[in-house]
Length: 246
Image 1 (cartoon, rainbow, N blue to C red):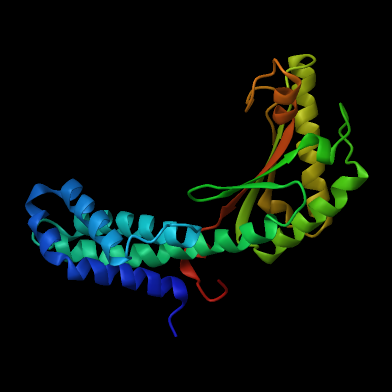
Image 2 (image 1 turned 90 degrees about the vertical axis):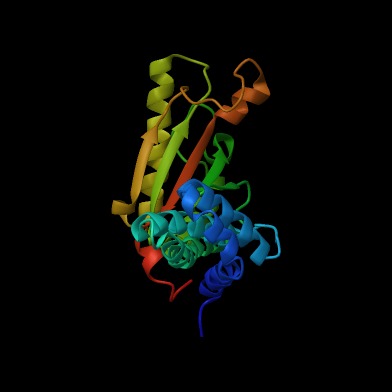
């Protein structure tokens, strides 16, 4: 049985085939017009359903990217055929990585205090520093252990990804102090995840100090938002190639 994501890709391609006359009419206008036609007809084929998951978003974006590549490879005479083949292949690949992200996001959303943002090809998990560290300290507080242990479990459940830990501070104190504190906190989180059997080769720790605020440091509320640890999760290339576990 085809996995659900493959079905999504094939459904998208079938919609393109049904609207093929529209696509052919744009062949002579070049790839840009062709891709615009593919985007519209693909949405028609899916009934304009909301792209409410990474699986759906990835399938559609993958189809568009695959169509562009297929049209270019097919050349002027076979641009339509190449676009259709590329769209189907791209939809499957894009849907696979979307599903991989969706599955992780559901687990990560259950961690108390974790804010999970879904990006095009990655997840960003944000912890306010007060959930992990006492003010001005680089040692994990007791309440951080369960949160990070659950994070480690999810990372181990989905081993085909790289992890970037990013430490951030507000602008209180010297720039050098804040830079050092952000690095130490990122390293501390990395060390804990490694102690929970997350492979060290997967994890990079970076400190950004006060250089990347998400709010104004002029207010207490803004400074609290800026004191944070972010964990970015990026699926590996293998996720595109193996659908058996997703």
